[in-house]
Image (cartoon, rainbow, N blue to C red; front, side, top):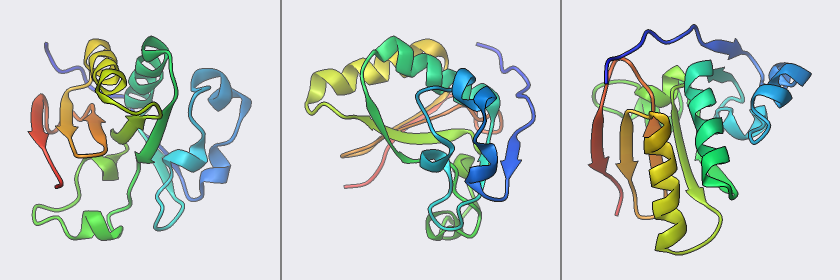
Length: 145
């Protein structure tokens, strides 16, 4: 699959600035508050990546919980990365997991995310990472304990 040039990211100094009817109609499953940086409340989101997340959620058909989305470069996790901030700092990554426990919902969520076109996939003990970052392309890894 070729890499398409991603659209410009949307940037908000505080997540409350993103609340709008347009947001709710385009991304009804996700609020700006749950996607904002937990360190500073700023929000940067790539619309193309969030469109993929919305389509994956619709395809999955059940609830998911967002553990982490945008993280500012000063966020402790991003600041500690030896190669510098990653796709979370560009608004192209999401850590999420199905609300329902067990392997079957988790596998269904993985299938939905890969089907809609996410490029990066990380599997943690509790969370699943998906991103659509043109700088990193297609890859997969395990993380955490």
